[in-house]
Image (cartoon, rainbow, N blue to C red; front, side, top):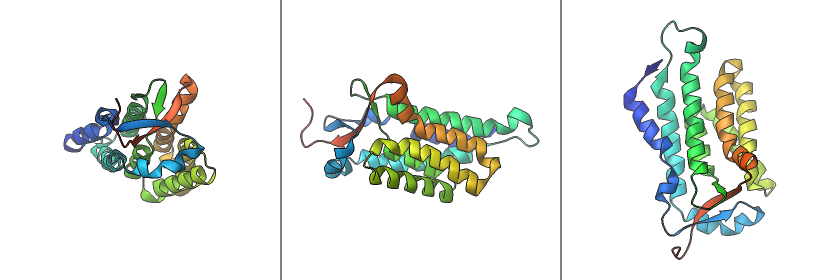
Length: 202
């Protein structure tokens, strides 16, 4: 596998830095529920969500561009870039989810996961998957379903538009996209989102 270190190192920094490190005193957490639409102004008031979205797009694109197979590689070595990219995608999402200052909770990195897929996969595939996930989650008033729907949509739309050659990368991307939701099921943790409070926490 060939690695373009000029792109690979920035990609790691962008993707593997936990956003919780930048959650200051005014950042609070609230469970993801049907009533969360009442708090849009506080959610959008936290600029870290925008930063998460942009850095995930850029990091995902840099990571995809940094890895390429060796000429003449066969077997497992031919898939080394795809496997490496998928493992790092999953690691990045898990870091953003599991590291949470709310006890017994998993942070829901909505914008990070959306940005990661948009930067890692063709826009026709990732854009449609993200749009479908947002539509279903908003329409059903069940925001937590964003992650499993996005996972399924990425795999289905990717196979439809990209065909079987994309299957390994789609499976790994789908696992990464659904990991925050799967984590809450496996370890019985609450899914929470971050927002900007009017007053800093004590």
